Amino acid sequence: MPLPIAVPAAFRIIAHRGASAYAPENTAPAFRLAAAMGADEVELDAQLAADGEIVLCHDRDLTRYGHGARVVEEMSWPELSALDMGAWFSPYLFGGERMLRLEDLFALFGDQLTYHIEIKGAASGLPAAIHAAILRHGLAERCIVTSFSAAALGAMRAIDRNMRLGWLVREIDAGALAQARDLGLFQLCPAAETVTAQQVAQARDVTPEVRAWGLDERGEVLALIQRVLDAGCDGMTINWPDWVTH
Image 1: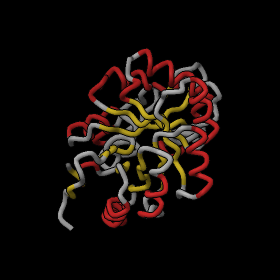
Image 2: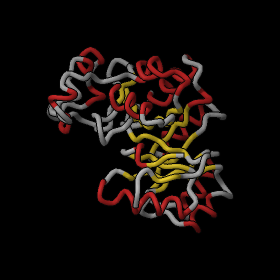
Image 3: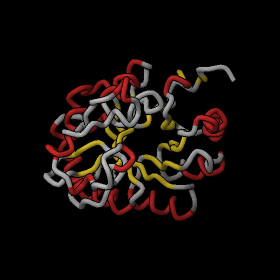
Image 4: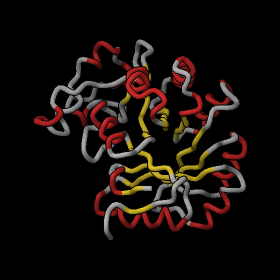
């Protein structure tokens, strides 16, 4: 299959943690590269540091990034900001790259991007902190808040009845549809490997959009892209945003 693959004009090409196949996830180079590749939507992972700063990091602890089993939520921003978050990916290309805060990302790109902000971790104050940051930067129309946790989405809905929310699920089933209706979701977000046209059709009775996740294994991506398109999804997160184009 020749690359890039053409997708419908309205299809959301969402760079997963930035262009994370080419640069360390959730860092400035990954987001800059995604934008350079033409992606105007990015997905990112938000956690709450011990001092209340919203930091961008996927894993609960720092083992994968070379800093041991220290827990992100138990560290302060000064501690986290001193860490090298690029060398684990490529010491030569990205050694010395630092962690970002949500504030930093908003300051870098403003309304140039649409942000799919995933609530990670267990900090009860994270939904309110994310909401405050979004409003402070005037980016409510450019943000979609997502989570695997229905409780976290419920907390955000209690704060803001108009915030666009997306629930990350393994597959769209009766339970997911019911929860989507109860929460007034904007998106249901199934795993790409499970999504079907029938599920998408059912979801459209409940949510405006269906967008897929899990296009992050190189050997499977082409087949998954085709599956997502055949199912009629409205978008997908992908580590290789240059593999698809409008």
